[in-house]
Image (cartoon, rainbow, N blue to C red; front, side):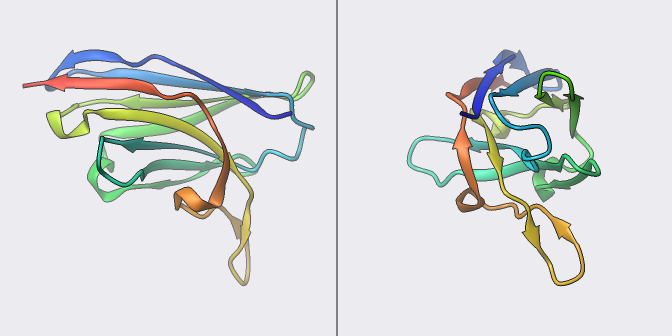
Length: 135
């Protein structure tokens, strides 16, 4: 059974950096296509931050984090583990949220496979890690 374990949240001052990690295990190698990071504040909808298509490492970013956040992966074939990283730089108070790692299926876009970017397209979620940015 697919399992996601997150780490790396914390508190930082504006302008600082943090790196989040999410390790996926318990899946058949070749069946994990999309990993992503989402964030949510109380009373707000969960929003996509960054998505990576594991087959070719193509990425999708929310406009609000482009140029500041980078998603990457470290896939280990032999024991079917994949770690997705979210490197966050130039953090701002508006980046404060609970950050969730998620895994989802790929989607056919008419001429290619890739990942969708909405929370409804991801079926497995981590427990969340808090990121707090102070001004």
